[in-house]
Image (cartoon, rainbow, N blue to C red; front, top):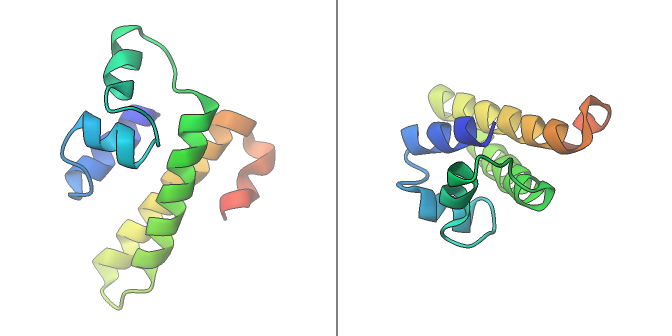
Length: 98
């Protein structure tokens, strides 16, 4: 899941590397994503919630654009935010980021 978020953000130019993603989107140390990859671990609930909050805020901001492709990126980021919340809490609390 977190890899999908990282790759999406990289493709749209929001991040350039794992250090930036770990720091700016997960709210963790620069090496966080590298470490969980190396140890084959899942991200912490804290990192996922930090990411969900940033994804939703960014998605909401993009959705205010009059440019359809930018609005679509906003929808995509909001969808990723919902996925992060689901991973932590399950589908029952999905409406938190709707």
